[in-house]
Length: 111
Image (cartoon, rainbow, N blue to C red):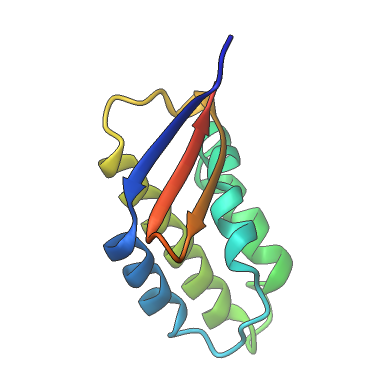
C-alpha cells in the first residue's frame, strides 16, 4: 500500500500548542517527539498520552503534578486540533506527523 502525504496549515495549531506548553514550569520535552507521537495516540488513545507525560513528569509527585497535567493537556489539544483539521482521515493509518516551522505546515504520513 502506498503512503499518502497530507499537508495542512499548521500555524494556528502550532501557536496554540506553544501557548499550552508555555504554562509548564519544566521544559524538558521535545517538540518534534511530541508531534511524531501523534500516530501512537491515534491508535492507543489518551492512555498513551498519560504514559508519555507521566514518564517525564510523574503525576504522583507534588512538584511535577502540574507539569504532568499541562503536558498531557497540551498533547491532547494538539492531537484533537489535527483530528479536526483532517476530518475523514482514518487515524489508525497515521505513520508519522511533523511540523515544518519555515513553512508553518503540519506534514502527516498515512499508510
